[in-house]
Image (cartoon, rainbow, N blue to C red; front, side, top):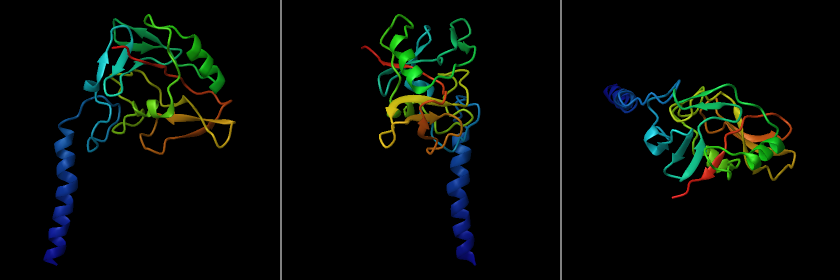
Length: 185
């Protein structure tokens, strides 16, 4: 009986103590967060530009802080308006013609690039809302085609914050778009 109590205490210490310790480190980067999970995209990993861009230092990718259809408000540091939904081919075309913050080499991110800004600590949305304010709980297109079926392409779901929130999606369905470029040194 004593062994079971010790095991129970050890389990609680392993689960509850880290939860309490990590909750003190809350970054307020999430609308909803699980403080027991280490932030995968802490604000300190980004260089935030006043022009509505953010450079993710670990990947050296520059992101538009707002999605297509939204407008960057430098005074408030926020994205205003609503994101527009695009089919996959429309999303690729929008990326090809996009100019923003003095750059014209924006593109639709591939699956791995978009996953690099997916915040596993957060849900509803699964994003760092300091870096990407006013982001909807939505699916976002990637440039990655789904090779098993040409009627599909990869998207990332920024709603639940679980690793199974990405998958193939019909290319004619409208989804949101966030553009990226390689940051120049």
